Amino acid sequence: MTQTRIIDWLQNLWISILIISPLVIMIKAVPHDWAGWVLVYFSYGIILCFKDFWEDGPLTFVMFLIISIYHAFAITNVYCATFLSGGADALDFHETAVRLVYGETTWQFGREIYELILSYFYKVFGPSLFFGGELSVFWMVLSLIIMVKTIRLLGLWQYRVGLMLLFGLLPSVIMFGTVSLREPLEVLFFLLTVYLTLKQRKSSTVKRGLLILAVITAFGMLHDGLLLYSVFLIVFNLYWGFKIDKKKIWGRFQRFLALILSLAFALAWISVTKEFGNAISALATGESLNYVENYRTASSSSRTTYGLLIDSSSSFGTVTNLPIMFLNYMFAPFIWQIGHLYDLYASMEAILRFSLICFSLLLWRRSQSEMRSQLGFLLVLFFTLEFTWSMGTIAWGTAIRHHLPAYGLLVLTGGPGLLAFLRKMVSRAAAGSERTTGGR
Image (cartoon, rainbow, N blue to C red; front, side):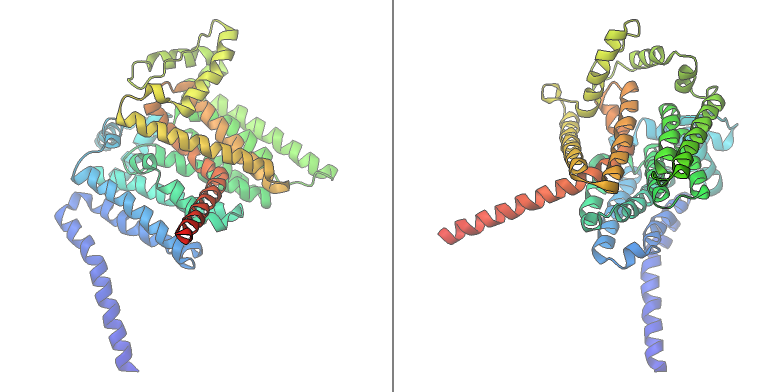
């Protein structure tokens, strides 16, 4: 017995050495990137801390596959070749954060908040472009975990593997989720808000309600447009997420009270943040359309611009332009606008988005009772967030990034229908092939 234990101990020791050796080698080779390499290992370990994964082999394999692809892109972007997503904004965020480490810090909402967050991590662990990218990967890993938990909460467990592949392996998720951009944190906070609200709907607690407010606040601080959207998010999530018995007078009063409190918090949020966010300041002063018009005009020089501006002087023109703006934001570039390989990819992603929306609406229409309410909640959040982005987005190149925070909700609502459709098509193709072979 003692000899068997010694052999097992030696085997475990050798396995541990084999696992840790690459980490030690990379830290020795690039010491300034040590924190990034530690995060690489930690991202795999955190998956095994959740029961949902270590009891489900296929799901764990898919999670490890997705995470490995994320790390491969993050490593390639720093050590081999810079991807399109790793230039411009990503480098600017990193370089500004590095300057903040050694200089004076500022406190403003929007991109400055993300730069400040990044600089705090750099102060503790050291400035490193690789570490910045791996932080984004870590936020995406947490988002993957929340997606799995939301899938279970919605009763979609039979589709878990397909839904995670659909969510995690979208090329734009991989490209923009592995560099130092705000989008991974936006995805994380938005999915966490949705998950917590769904939990609140099942069993309401004051503690969880406060946590929802905190997450929405963090979500709104990442972007000027999200700061404005968070006002709606506070009111709608707290109102819908409050579990009541509609048949009882006390239950109706509780929902009314939840509505009043959420409106009060939203008004307080506008009052506090109007000095920091341009969009919310425009809302507070009644200049929202002028702000949107000026913002879109200033951004209209890109190659991928679809060229729609708002004329705030005409109410009719504004009302008729909004749906066209939204459709272009959601589905451009169209066939006649494709002139580059990047445009072709954006068009293919738009087709996927359109398909998922169709399956989402179909599933919502066929659902009943609480499931219908949950799907309706997710769809309202999806369309309202996308509409908010569409007001300030004038190019499909930028739109690809802005679609990411709401993409998870579209996968949750439309993914099951798409996967069932694909399975049916594969089954029919296989049956047709068997008949053809049998006929011969």
